[in-house]
Image (cartoon, rainbow, N blue to C red; front, side, top):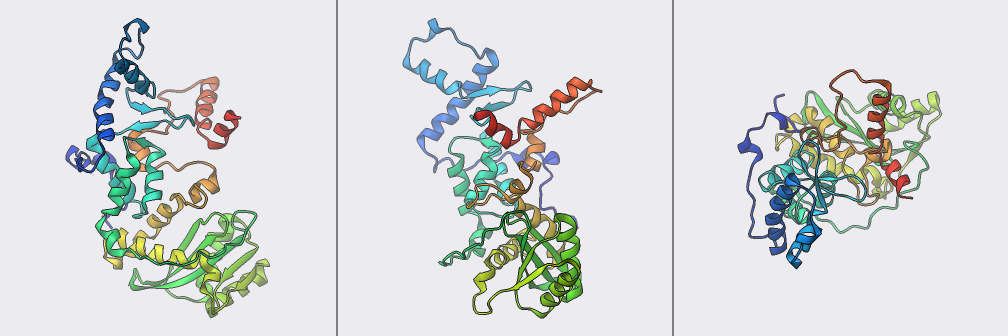
Length: 361
């Protein structure tokens, strides 16, 4: 497999990462801000301070107020200040299309909300949300594969801890890939963290091994499995019931939404596999782990954060972060003293959301 779901950001030419986008659709205010940004950056590079006696016009005061929202770090990178401390790297015009392409096309073709949150946690430019909305809505493959359905959302039962309750099901995928024609798919009822495995056969042994290896050995013994009435799953759950005391709960055959936590994302998984493979679905086996990772880091509207954040308490480091070094603490270039190492780790800890919230109190 030479195809990559995540672009090789470090080995891209300027022509690949520098691309203009339609300015006509942008507002006059956004264009004015774009014209002002280079002047603000130059002002910070030259001095970053001001003499009150030189501020003689309202335009000077307006410029100063705008400049106060930005700063340059020690490496000369231009940032927009954030009250939360997660300052956003300012993106030049020629790099914006590439940023949106990397956040949308290479991370599962998610919707406007998820793509915008992924970008705005790290980067900023004038009217970034509007640009993301325009880009996602103009994505050809998303328009072709879009499914609009007016349905009442299922009622999700509350669960008190991570992976105490697992919603699991299987689906058949055609054509087969690497000899696998089935996908067993499970989600934590609390966090919606996705686990999945490609199967050659849909039988009790294959499903039972997945439950034991990918769920129990990774997350601990689950209390309940919500599954369908398929014979293989019933036998797998029975085997786990006898060995580990896990209670299997069958859903109503007349109400598929009783297991909506996993039934609805089946469609999303199929869509992501189709888009990730560029329509060549025979390769879905090799893209399964890519789309699981993309799903785990996608921010949910219901919670305001990603499953990754709910499980770990921290935001994931993406290829864009590595390329732009937006959230990384400077790596030590030489052996450090104990006090220096502690200080470095304290800087990394300071980026933890829980600590940031404590500092606000």
